[in-house]
Image (cartoon, rainbow, N blue to C red):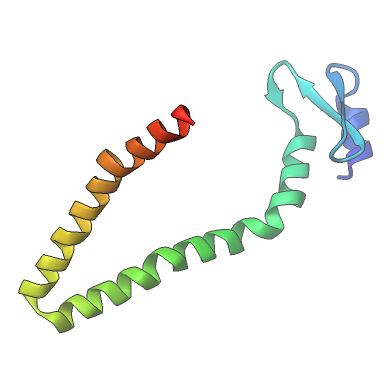
Length: 108
């Protein structure tokens, strides 16, 4: 179904709004997103949604894999020391360094 058929279908019972993104009419019926908006989202996001999720998942799991492999190679003592240092560094950044940076940026 193309956008002109959807527009004529929803024209009678809908509030018609002009959308500059698609240069066509998008209809919204009593707060429910119409089929046109779903169609536009599918056309616009459908091409990039799956590759974006693949890149996101790979950027999470590939480093995690290497961290696990290196920690197995290091042994338990060194892996635990590294993990404690990482967690302490994270909390230092969140609790001390970032608030100081925010405070300094508001004073300047």
